[in-house]
Image (cartoon, rainbow, N blue to C red; front, side, top):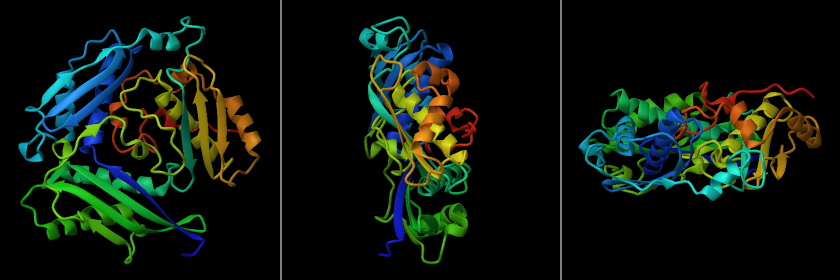
Length: 381
């Protein structure tokens, strides 16, 4: 292969994918808690399998949440509202195993508690934020296109254009880069759950015409390879076909494999947990660096110790695209941003119940005022 040509692939999943079902349930419960008590501390986990949703994890809140009701409402909204989907929202079992947050965790995130007076990080760990200028949302093109494809599947299912579609599905996009610039889309892969009576050729023709070509636009070429339901029929899907868990689609949630990921998931976690708030802040900083033309690409790493407010380390990588020295960019970051958990929560306004909509189609690159970490702060040298 030509050394100047690279193929980079990212995937996305629909909101009806079993893991994304769990992410949305976890964040829907968190939102309900935050709506009643903005000081809620929670780490809510979910498991979905045939005929059953299990909600577990820990919480400290003054809120009362009807878990059963939130679960069923979320499933209905996703589209598991008919028996043909194999996971009907009103006939599954819901098991609630939430328990109270450990007091030893609480003392690390409460002010004037534990060994430090400031609000500390809810856990140790490292978080990454990434941005590049290859798209108008400062995200890598492969993950942007992958999300657009899965979102389009859901849109056409819900508006009745392709009424034979069911909630589960996936996309995958391989983009060809030449001399580090986007050249073309090489391959698109789509898997979509459907009613049993649909003809496979008709489905493939519909998906190509109604989903792939409109989303790709000029990036679609005659030699773009397309695979739609490559194994054949996909009638049995969702949790009835494959178990789902909260936090198992972290690369889908972030940058599609570009940049880096620290390992922590987001959904179900209140902003005192730096897995979520620290990652959001790192994205905001990286995006501001690129949008301010300090670099074409920027990766920000921030790391914490549990119970300690200041990060133990901040690191950046600009992949040789920086317009000023990386030391200067670090100086600019330190002069413009605070990575203390309390400061992040206030600066990004993270105590509002807005997390359920982050739980499908990515946490970054979204044009929504509630995604405060997507705003840009202009940085001056």
